[in-house]
Length: 271
Length: 353
Ligand SMILES: Nc1ncnc2c1ncn2[C@@H]1O[C@H](COP(=O)(O)OP(=O)(O)OP(=O)(O)O)[C@@H](O)[C@H]1O
Ligand SMILES: [Mg+2]
Image (cartoon, rainbow over all chains, first blue to last red; front, side):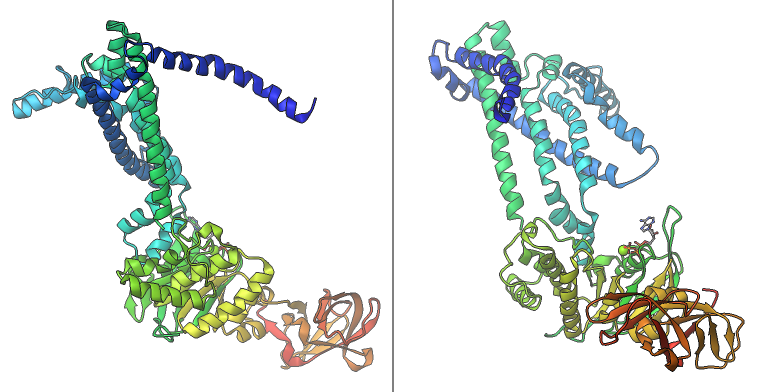
């Protein structure tokens, strides 16, 4: 047996698994999406149908906001945690990364405990302002939940990237007269850009497709996964839900590709 | 070059010691004066505190309480590095990977708000000065080690610093390139006339570049002097052995002579010590007929090292003696030879060291 055919033989199981569990169901999903009353045009409904389009915009806005806020919070926290040694640091890191294993349902539950009708925020605001602040069952609650969800993941990636930063670069910039802000802008953030893109992509994709938290908070939150769920189980509208699913995948992929090429050229152009 | 020629600050560090938080005592309190325009070399083996002293001068480390750093007589101890106007070249060069060569060189000027046109002119000037024309638009990872070194130097000099600090700038390069760049660096530093502190563990670099050399040993200053003083009149065994090759001979002294197994060697003063430690440089020893020198021994080995030959002689002293002789001397292993050493070439060292 030649070396080449041996390599191909080893790749065979991978090919089988890919075909069975990935390609075939995907193909079926794509076909189902085109089997509605409008045929292939069903795919365009996600953009043309006003209700679907509003949901799509909502979802993208939510995912983008989640990603941006997560990156800001996680960068500041990750940088601080990686660069400073203080008592209780290990405990703090453990606490921050504790929600990693929680499913969306638990996150939703936590949000209700915090901002629900009997929640902490409601209690405090009631006592201080005489008005009960409740936002758990809306897209704001969902936003908070997604932050909770993605911050631990992103913090770990950023901490690893910060650890690999060359302190010499920062010292060089300072010796040339750069203020602490300028050092961050010109040296630290460009060096962290790849970590931002990688962890931001995960945060974004998760926020686009997560379902458990939304489902726990309320059934009428206007995001794509909830829409797919209602079309599928309540309206038994298989072709629409399939078309929406494919659309969700493509749009997420497209936005991530856009972000990646933009940040790639931004890194190159920073010079 | 232009306005920066002959410029720079004078500097004084006063009782600067450094104890790191983990208790490591990297530097014993040291005091040092550096004149305006002088090139001072910090020389010493790995871990002796050279980088620590440089970082204290730069403002990247604070000296232990009581220590002071003064530029032109002004106390800078608590001024952060970004306001000290020092140019630094790091051992790893620390060039910004996200900027082109030209942007690296111009970064300090950009931070200072120098207009783009003026900045470009200054960058062009430095590119020419450091011999890197044609590389301006390259990314850093597209440069060779020697080119990176030049960019790092150009970047540090661009801001017309009061003091230029270099931490082993040539160590990362291969030997041939190092030799060439050393000469180039020397000419450049002389042309700039800027106050320079240069850290190295390579004594050849220290000799060539330094107006004065500070030899450091385990966090203390072992000796300060011109390269010639350090080489010819070391004040301790450590300095003698660290700078160049040295024969260190322990021997009793009688009426101004070292009493050795291979004969007697005059030392130029008629001291009487029970024993002394003497240093003799290999190139100060002349190989002659046995009868023409009071000291003699047997050649153990001869090795040809290009411009001269190195002989190892046994029997003259209790230890082997190394002699650097011109290639014109006919010498064979096993031959008995006389060793002619002028009394001034024998340097007595304090015996406790
Ligand atoms: N941040 C630090 N914390 C604790 N100890 C340190 C620190 N930096 C340096 N040291 C110690 O201080 C001593 C002097 O270090 P320094 O870097 O000044 O040596 P050096 O002369 O520059 O050596 P080399 O030639 O290897 O660069 C060493 O023993 C080193 O281990
Ligand atoms: Mg060092």
